[in-house]
Amino acid sequence: MKQTNQLKKIGAIATIAFPILQMVSQGLIQIGGMEPSFAAPASEIVTFFENRDPALFAIGNYIFMLSLVAFLWFLGVLWDELRTAEGGSGWISLIAVGSGLVVAANLAGPGGWPLAIFRIGEGLEPQIARLLFDHGNLNFANMWVALGSMVLAAGLIMRHSDRFPTWLGWGSLVLAIGLLLARTVWTLAVAFAPYLLFWVWMISLGVVVLRRLRRKDHS
Image: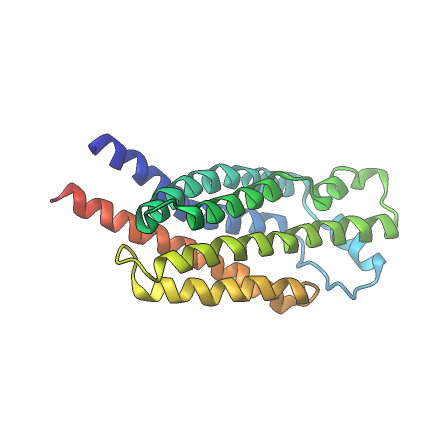
């Protein structure tokens, strides 16, 4: 039992580590100037890619991929927590984790931005730059739908379990709605707000699990 708790602590720490790795990776990727709006001319998108620091972008992109490992450990903890709280056949827990695996596949999938930076030294046609820019952002926006499904399923279980604080259950449901609706306005800057709140949700969940495991250690 003690060994199981120690391993679960690693998963809870990974839950907190994922948002941190994402923030660090995005910080490195954005060095050189913030990304243009979707309405920006193609020439501005080319300039955006040209202004990336190749080394820092590569490091940021690698950290982004490393965050996938943390996310998979998070899914393990989420599965254990939700299945225990739900009881029965655990079918809602399965939906949550299945949605999370779709997110993981999206994180591991090809993105347009790294390809643009990789070939920027050979010259980048404006329309190709726009295509890669939009492809990367649309792929990212599609991920919000799967995240919304995952958080919604988790929230439904959390709302009816004393394993989680009441505010986390209600907050999950509100966040899920935000993530699902964000896809409808994915070209607007405000659409990224629910994803940033998802980072807060993950950190909160990780802290809740860690605190419970520490209480078990001292009981």
